[in-house]
Length: 166
Image (cartoon, rainbow, N blue to C red; front, top):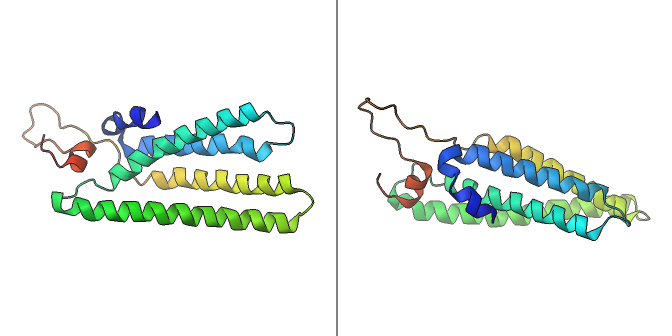
């Protein structure tokens, strides 16, 4: 669902704003898991997980679109391969890092397994907060030239991806 909302707004707001907002949602919706305990409602956690998924879905498209901005039609396949490879390796690497953090926390506190998971969730929220800062390097919204100027209109993010002229 978030991709439907995001897709139509990338040109209007730019990848930077949408990705930063998505990562804020991801970070904020991860925090409740760091406080979860044996008496925490499973339904409440499920709702936070849906919200987190919405944030992750909102992040995917603007980050992928930013990889195609300004490319010629011949460069798009190469960018596609690179972005998918980076996504696969990055996801695997992130999972491995969090697994090591969890394993280390379990080894440090073997009697309190929930606390070890709290540590891992705090790290996950922290990584998402760092991603908010990194997303500020993504391209912003493309500005249209003012009427009456001879400047050719700059291509939008969607034009860069589809390769279609205005």
